[in-house]
Length: 192
Image (cartoon, rainbow, N blue to C red; front, side, top):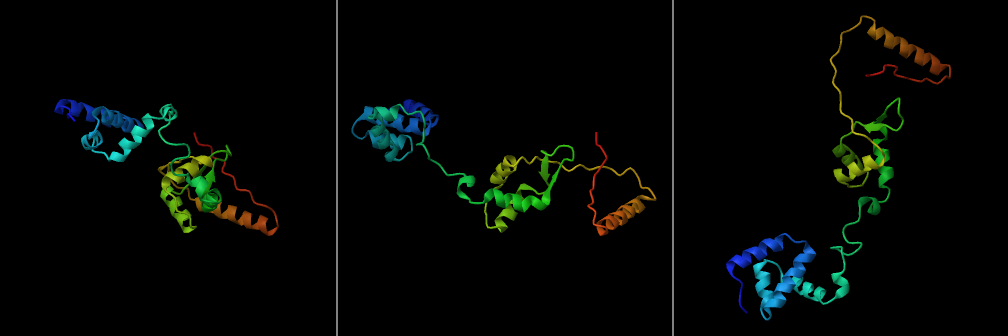
């Protein structure tokens, strides 16, 4: 077997690194076929890869059906999503953020939570469900939660009767509840 020149080897390595896993296997197999006896060993050393993928590539080159496949991996390959493997994930998520959910008074579809993604993941872990913040992001999106930034505002001043108005509201609320009437709280300030 005659090895390639150093210049050709460098070009082959650069080209090999630019290929997908499937194409690397097949390219290495073609090169090993061309070299004949000792070609697999030489190519595996040249490309710094195991000889098993080269042998698999040689088998693939002999099968027409395999050469016509467009996908790199077989159907169903890869890890299943947390939604498929963790039973009750959605219910647990909604349960842990129920007390930390707020929404827009003018649009019922707008909801957010004051918890961070990490805090939600920790609350789920305390429920016996270990998930990453990536899964938490997917849960927030699935259940239509939006990101909300805290807004800091400078107080515009104080009014001497400010506390008195809240005490009056509390007194009225207690009187209505004692009488068996429902109490509805509504913020009427509209922000621009």
